[in-house]
Picture 1 (cartoon, rainbow, N blue to C red):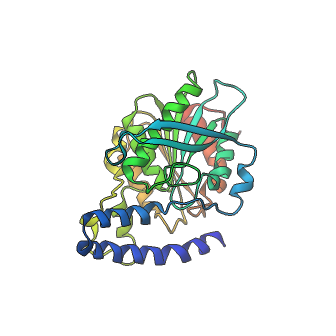
Picture 2: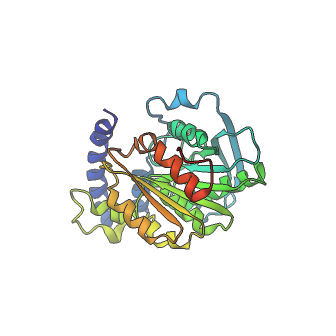
Picture 3: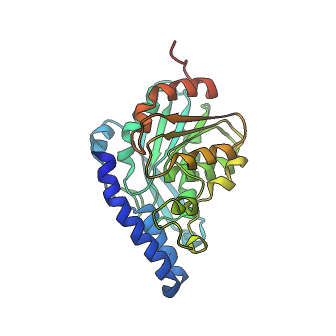
Length: 294
């Protein structure tokens, strides 16, 4: 029932977004950009189904820094995150970057699954989500938040190998972060895409010429070849929100070593769950974490 419920929300939202993009020509560039940011991120403090209960027992993480992004330079920023460490301080750590609409608690089940694979896991809310500083997120601001979380992990676990994980929209943010840092041990992208214009082209109204109007492009395809560590791209075969072909196309742009996992029968939201055995094998093979099942 979850994918059906989500699609009922998503399709009208996509239509509204398309109309907003066209109307933006009359409303001005600033308004167009703000509307796109609101549509793409849909920030708030919503949590999906069992996320709140799954988050219980995790530690709160608070990350304070001053923004250097153009639109908020000098502002004090406070990010809220959930921290699920391993007992071993030398265990690999994973920065988890979530997708749109729901706050970090919705990712708690995925966090626990990655923890089971041997990672300490930090997941954060970007500005505008959950208990983080208020505001309207953007590609630039979310990227800055991801960098701040990456630095926090380095301080917390200076001896551990650090990995980056992004789901859906978070996948594009993860690719950008991995392309810009030089100390990541690996990148995992699940249910993500090549760019926002490419996603828009898959909609029912994708033939409309809105591509040039898109300001929040999240062009992961142009950045993933800059990632210098092993890359794991995962997609569900039945993902109707972000089509598997977009995940495959992103994978094709990545450098070796890399691996693509297509989880049979998985949707946008169930890939991590149904694909756990494949995850375990791939993480062991590509990153040397744990051992694949015999």
